[in-house]
Length: 171
Image 1 (cartoon, rainbow, N blue to C red):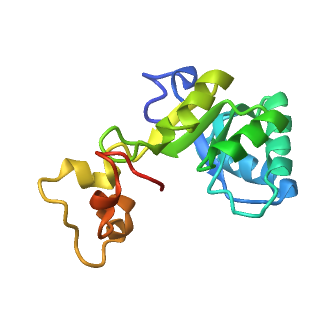
Image 2: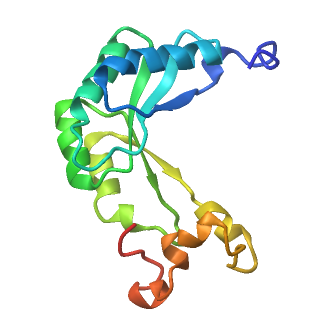
Protein backbone atom coordinates (compact mmCIF):
# COMPACT_ATOMS: atom_id res chain seq x y z
CA UNK A 1 0.00 0.00 0.00
CA UNK A 2 2.83 2.37 0.78
CA UNK A 3 4.20 1.98 -2.76
CA UNK A 4 0.84 2.90 -4.24
CA UNK A 5 -0.02 5.70 -1.82
CA UNK A 6 1.35 8.35 -4.18
CA UNK A 7 -1.07 7.19 -6.90
CA UNK A 8 -4.04 5.81 -4.94
CA UNK A 9 -5.56 7.31 -1.84
CA UNK A 10 -6.69 5.12 1.05
CA UNK A 11 -10.30 6.08 0.35
CA UNK A 12 -10.03 4.47 -3.11
CA UNK A 13 -9.08 1.10 -1.60
CA UNK A 14 -11.37 -1.49 -0.06
CA UNK A 15 -9.53 -3.43 2.62
CA UNK A 16 -11.21 -6.54 3.95
CA UNK A 17 -10.01 -8.98 6.54
CA UNK A 18 -11.37 -11.97 8.36
CA UNK A 19 -11.16 -12.67 12.05
CA UNK A 20 -11.02 -16.29 13.11
CA UNK A 21 -12.19 -16.21 16.69
CA UNK A 22 -15.34 -17.10 18.57
CA UNK A 23 -14.27 -15.15 21.64
CA UNK A 24 -15.86 -11.68 21.55
CA UNK A 25 -13.16 -10.46 23.94
CA UNK A 26 -10.42 -11.05 21.37
CA UNK A 27 -12.15 -9.48 18.33
CA UNK A 28 -10.89 -5.95 18.97
CA UNK A 29 -7.32 -7.17 19.47
CA UNK A 30 -7.43 -9.06 16.17
CA UNK A 31 -8.91 -6.10 14.32
CA UNK A 32 -6.26 -3.78 15.79
CA UNK A 33 -3.55 -6.25 14.80
CA UNK A 34 -4.85 -6.16 11.22
CA UNK A 35 -4.96 -2.35 11.31
CA UNK A 36 -1.34 -2.21 12.44
CA UNK A 37 -0.21 -4.76 9.87
CA UNK A 38 -2.06 -2.93 7.08
CA UNK A 39 -0.94 0.47 8.40
CA UNK A 40 -4.41 1.98 8.29
CA UNK A 41 -6.88 3.53 10.73
CA UNK A 42 -9.90 1.51 9.64
CA UNK A 43 -10.94 -1.64 7.81
CA UNK A 44 -13.56 -1.40 5.12
CA UNK A 45 -14.91 -4.90 5.79
CA UNK A 46 -14.41 -7.23 8.75
CA UNK A 47 -15.71 -10.78 8.33
CA UNK A 48 -15.96 -13.65 10.79
CA UNK A 49 -14.25 -16.45 8.87
CA UNK A 50 -15.91 -19.89 8.61
CA UNK A 51 -18.37 -19.89 11.52
CA UNK A 52 -18.45 -23.19 13.41
CA UNK A 53 -21.60 -25.21 13.77
CA UNK A 54 -23.04 -25.10 17.25
CA UNK A 55 -21.14 -21.94 18.26
CA UNK A 56 -23.11 -18.79 19.07
CA UNK A 57 -21.59 -16.21 16.73
CA UNK A 58 -23.91 -13.35 17.66
CA UNK A 59 -21.64 -12.09 20.50
CA UNK A 60 -18.76 -11.84 18.01
CA UNK A 61 -20.95 -9.84 15.64
CA UNK A 62 -22.08 -7.57 18.46
CA UNK A 63 -18.41 -6.81 19.06
CA UNK A 64 -17.89 -6.13 15.34
CA UNK A 65 -20.89 -3.77 15.49
CA UNK A 66 -19.26 -1.96 18.42
CA UNK A 67 -16.04 -1.60 16.41
CA UNK A 68 -18.09 -0.31 13.47
CA UNK A 69 -19.68 2.29 15.72
CA UNK A 70 -16.19 3.24 16.96
CA UNK A 71 -15.03 3.78 13.36
CA UNK A 72 -12.50 0.93 13.21
CA UNK A 73 -14.67 -1.04 10.75
CA UNK A 74 -16.93 0.39 8.04
CA UNK A 75 -18.90 -2.74 7.10
CA UNK A 76 -19.68 -5.99 8.90
CA UNK A 77 -19.35 -9.14 6.83
CA UNK A 78 -20.57 -12.69 7.30
CA UNK A 79 -19.43 -15.79 5.43
CA UNK A 80 -20.59 -19.29 4.64
CA UNK A 81 -23.85 -19.41 6.58
CA UNK A 82 -27.01 -21.18 5.51
CA UNK A 83 -29.87 -18.78 4.78
CA UNK A 84 -31.76 -19.46 8.03
CA UNK A 85 -28.68 -18.59 10.13
CA UNK A 86 -27.96 -15.50 8.04
CA UNK A 87 -31.53 -14.36 8.70
CA UNK A 88 -31.13 -14.98 12.44
CA UNK A 89 -27.81 -13.15 12.56
CA UNK A 90 -29.07 -10.20 10.51
CA UNK A 91 -32.08 -9.83 12.85
CA UNK A 92 -29.69 -9.56 15.82
CA UNK A 93 -26.82 -7.60 14.22
CA UNK A 94 -27.30 -6.03 10.78
CA UNK A 95 -24.92 -7.57 8.27
CA UNK A 96 -23.66 -5.33 5.45
CA UNK A 97 -22.04 -7.91 3.18
CA UNK A 98 -22.27 -11.68 2.82
CA UNK A 99 -19.59 -13.82 1.21
CA UNK A 100 -20.40 -17.25 -0.21
CA UNK A 101 -19.15 -19.63 -2.86
CA UNK A 102 -20.99 -18.84 -6.07
CA UNK A 103 -20.33 -19.62 -9.71
CA UNK A 104 -22.74 -19.07 -12.58
CA UNK A 105 -21.44 -22.30 -14.09
CA UNK A 106 -21.20 -24.67 -11.13
CA UNK A 107 -22.24 -23.41 -7.69
CA UNK A 108 -25.65 -21.79 -8.05
CA UNK A 109 -27.22 -22.93 -4.77
CA UNK A 110 -27.16 -19.36 -3.35
CA UNK A 111 -29.79 -18.44 -5.94
CA UNK A 112 -32.34 -20.53 -4.04
CA UNK A 113 -32.37 -18.63 -0.75
CA UNK A 114 -29.22 -16.61 -0.03
CA UNK A 115 -29.43 -14.18 -2.94
CA UNK A 116 -33.16 -13.48 -2.53
CA UNK A 117 -32.68 -12.81 1.19
CA UNK A 118 -29.68 -10.54 0.57
CA UNK A 119 -31.71 -8.53 -1.96
CA UNK A 120 -34.64 -8.25 0.44
CA UNK A 121 -32.42 -7.24 3.38
CA UNK A 122 -30.13 -4.89 1.41
CA UNK A 123 -27.05 -7.05 2.04
CA UNK A 124 -24.28 -6.90 -0.56
CA UNK A 125 -23.25 -10.31 -1.93
CA UNK A 126 -19.56 -11.06 -2.39
CA UNK A 127 -18.99 -14.25 -4.37
CA UNK A 128 -15.84 -16.28 -3.94
CA UNK A 129 -14.54 -19.01 -6.25
CA UNK A 130 -16.50 -17.84 -9.31
CA UNK A 131 -14.06 -19.87 -11.41
CA UNK A 132 -14.35 -22.88 -9.05
CA UNK A 133 -10.82 -22.44 -7.73
CA UNK A 134 -9.39 -22.66 -11.22
CA UNK A 135 -11.54 -25.52 -12.48
CA UNK A 136 -13.31 -23.35 -15.05
CA UNK A 137 -10.07 -21.82 -16.30
CA UNK A 138 -8.68 -25.19 -17.42
CA UNK A 139 -9.34 -27.23 -20.53
CA UNK A 140 -9.28 -30.43 -18.51
CA UNK A 141 -11.00 -30.83 -15.16
CA UNK A 142 -8.21 -32.83 -13.58
CA UNK A 143 -5.82 -31.64 -10.90
CA UNK A 144 -2.93 -33.63 -9.46
CA UNK A 145 -3.98 -36.48 -7.14
CA UNK A 146 -2.94 -34.60 -3.98
CA UNK A 147 -4.51 -31.28 -4.95
CA UNK A 148 -7.12 -30.27 -2.32
CA UNK A 149 -9.38 -28.95 -5.08
CA UNK A 150 -10.22 -32.56 -5.89
CA UNK A 151 -12.53 -32.40 -2.86
CA UNK A 152 -14.65 -29.66 -4.47
CA UNK A 153 -18.29 -30.66 -4.82
CA UNK A 154 -18.29 -30.43 -8.66
CA UNK A 155 -15.40 -32.89 -8.88
CA UNK A 156 -16.92 -35.54 -6.59
CA UNK A 157 -17.79 -38.83 -8.25
CA UNK A 158 -21.41 -38.85 -9.36
CA UNK A 159 -21.96 -35.15 -8.75
CA UNK A 160 -23.01 -34.35 -12.31
CA UNK A 161 -25.55 -37.16 -12.35
CA UNK A 162 -27.10 -35.99 -9.04
CA UNK A 163 -27.63 -32.40 -10.10
CA UNK A 164 -30.18 -30.87 -12.43
CA UNK A 165 -28.35 -29.08 -15.21
CA UNK A 166 -25.51 -27.07 -13.73
CA UNK A 167 -27.13 -26.46 -10.33
CA UNK A 168 -25.33 -27.81 -7.28
CA UNK A 169 -27.68 -29.43 -4.78
CA UNK A 170 -25.66 -28.41 -1.75
CA UNK A 171 -22.18 -27.18 -0.95
